[in-house]
Image 1 (tube, rainbow, N blue to C red):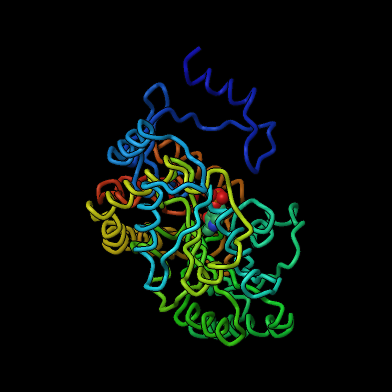
Image 2: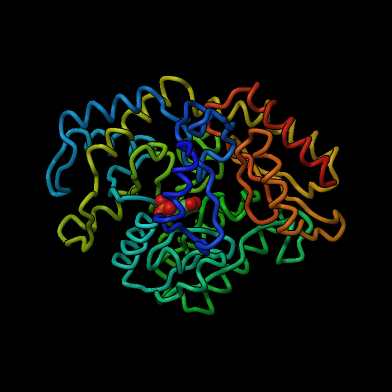
Length: 432
Ligand code: PLP
């Protein structure tokens, strides 16, 4: 048997996969990667327009990040979170330095879910309140409070944490508010949010937790005034605003943080994924000084064995330095504007199956429909066929519900975008 066959056999015999019935899985074998490409053991390569789970922002096997991890491994691979460690301190300084003024401290976690978990805990502790309002059509992670804050199907079988309330957010293409303009959608979504807070009792609401741009749910870029309006509502009722930048942060939108484009100041920022492109698991909470100082005398009742792990924080330091030195965030912005946006517009012009395209930077979604007038989503079987045909053309896509998310690493080039769009075009021709 080939190494690819052996890998598949081992996987099917012993690996229990996320979010799946185990019986009929056939995971793609990936053995290596570099930049925007990954390959199997027999040398079959794929252009990665998924960035895996939208996390490999710097691309695969960036030499400076690999070198940073190796150097740290030779120095000290692990140390307790209660110690002071130079690499951890440097990572925290760099991450806080990317946030607005008034954010100096970082609490490190293992990933995005526990970042949200701890941000929610901080909000509850400083407000003395319980409820957390988040959005339908969101994903915040797969742990106690984070999964119940989530606004998609994954919440429902896991609904054991209390104190979670959901609202609809702005999504003009499928408006819950009968809106026809972005301004109407924004104003009505804000009215709905405020009415839910009033009905729940403002003095019971600890936090509003929102993805700055909902990612997995469909890359819904907020309409003008929405996030600024949420900030005003938080101020009116003394509610903590937590912005989840796990997917949208660290270059994905062509900014260090997606919220930078929306005139809003959060109280807590959660991050993971792009902070070190997942080379070693890492997440965390960037804490505003006003909240951090509340724990100067009072104990913060939370911690993790691997909080600020040396290998993970070394990867973050190297990632942030390389992204700055190589203009990788700027590349994401330029590619989005000059290369992805015009090609998506062209594709939407040509294929009736494209109902809407939306996004920014290297964070886009094409929403596919069976009928442009009714906006009925393309059925799951067709989406499955699209995924298969894209893979057959050497493109690793991110397909979610009735959407193709165009989410390459931030280092993607114009030529690679052209290559991917040739595949999208061919495959959409088959289905439209
Ligand atoms: N928040 C957002 C916006 C995410 O997209 C994700 C993961 O996809 C998470 C939180 C959870 O992160 P993790 O899987 O690292 O726990």
